[in-house]
Length: 287
Image 1 (cartoon, rainbow, N blue to C red):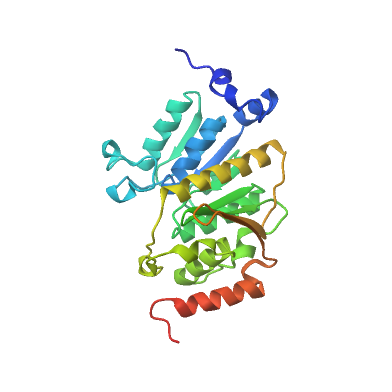
Image 2: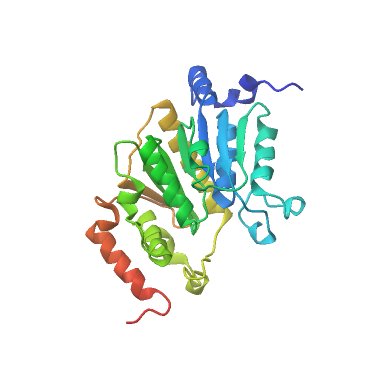
């Protein structure tokens, strides 16, 4: 059977108009990271009918990825994530204009990665501080909307950074701080509501110093649904999009949705208090 774009995405019509679907087909989205959230971001947005992507990742699949990464299977062990996910997306839409960045995101390819891009969706590993800081700084400089949706427990926390509004750096306040401090600021800043913390049954599974923590496929898939919906609203200029310092967290385990507002980002007194408490709870911290 021949591939026909209009037939492939016909079931989107009703939630979007035919003209809007054509608009989505003409958009280009950049996604850095093809792991837990990045891979499912790509496939979700491909099924939405986005026509062009820039994707970046330097890593290969390992058996430790099986619990959450859509591209991780026995047949893909050891294969580059960027290639596996590219082929999966092309199997959905063989007409995709898809540019791969197999060395990951770096200062050397930052300009080409964001060239002609309408929107950036963050799929980087939690601890990829340098790449994330560079990517969001580039978005702020180039006026590119950017979305980060974090998988936290069995839910997602979403922040959207729009041109003319608070930037990633203004919200999180990373600067040139050490990685441990960036990790803490990122974790606290992503989800001021902290819905996920109450059902973590083994706190020792989180160790920021060793750059490890638990994850679920539910969190990753909820991230993709939330980010794709934000993407649709931004690209079609239809619907309520609230830029940071607004954000929201939805937790499926607790059946809760909380919209957050932190003027000043991590400089907000509530955030400063949350970070102080988090530092005290950190393994090895003095009390």
